[in-house]
Image (cartoon, rainbow, N blue to C red):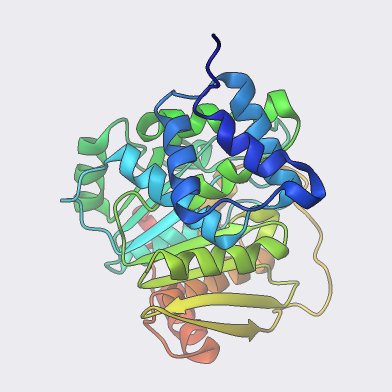
Length: 328
């Protein structure tokens, strides 16, 4: 007698049609994602589950429980103190990843930043790991590297494949399924070192509300989600910016104005070396510097270091003007 696979119940919940299907309860969501991460679900089941969730659109409660399951499974060390968890998965296509300089600027001023993410699946983008290597910034291979790099530099990038292989494998299914899934949001929001502040950039504006509510449900002390350039956590100087904040466990929203009134021309050559030249002051880029300052200001606001846009921008601008130019 054949027995139904234990994971089948979760596919049934999501896939019973318009009248029969429903969202997962918190207990079901955490149990289902835990089974996937432990290798207890069949590949076909995982694909069905992820695509049914995409069609239904996961809610904030489901997302929060998937993240909780990921944190439990990863079991990262708890003795690495960081101020800011910064995910980077999308890559940049039209403009350089100026947010890397924002992170460096904040790190130079005592903020301990754990940056993590993937190197992506698109050949026409430049990814954070590549930039860190190009600029001589630390890329960790293990948790001990992370600890040492943050102690020495207040900054480190740790590829997802090195600390969350099951999540990386699920994210890689994008090439098989042809679509992103909830896993890509989970990887952004895992915050494995339990930083007091977590920031996320998203590409599709409707996801911002879900992410903010998930941060709230996870009792994240401080968090910020924005529609960032190319989906990265980066201020877009040519667009108004809506902030979805969690501060001291309470949700708020803010609107920040654009820096430029009109769209700026994209980069003609995506060369990470330009980041070094702009940092050193041997080259200038009005868009890039506005993106660096704006992103640093957003991070300062996310951490609740400054009370509003004006104060956060002023501090970020001051830090930029007084940066150590020979650091890169």
